[in-house]
Image (cartoon, rainbow, N blue to C red; front, side):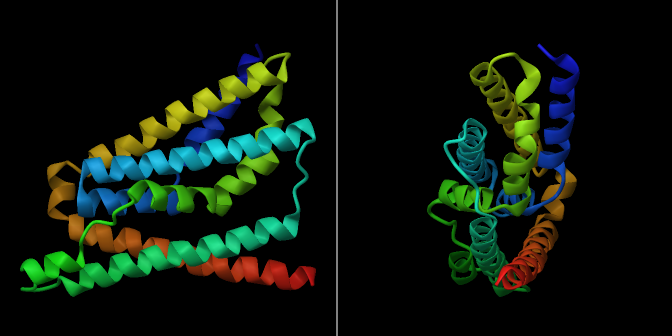
Length: 213
């Protein structure tokens, strides 16, 4: 096994997963608003999205799938729209419950989404950062062993484990006293960050699509 290459992969995906982005912002927002169990289901959805992207990368490596750049840009564009929609809903819910509006009517406005895993999956699978990594950079690590299937199995297992550990660590951090006291502010900031990511990503994808016409 090529251990230096494996260590480089571990370092790369640790930074990729831990760096604030759509997935981290969504998980923090869910953890601050709805608690550990709800956010963990969101994480399972994002993890499943990663497995789908890894499977797509494997098909590219094997030559069974060719990647169309324009197609990827449209996916990113639609993903940004969905991320922006989630962020807008979160912000609207938080500001609807400001001041003394903490009664049952306000509580109904911030009702939990019924399918957190689905939200997590859709954000994860349309996350431009992950799409670029798995399509462009993931194949560079396939040489950690002499056989591609074994390399894919190891790379996938390492990703799943680190992805779960890092995102669950974010959720667990939200249970601390400081974060509990500041959870509304954190929820607003994370939702606002999601909205900024969506807006920037949407504009960038739109410009990229226009440039290919």
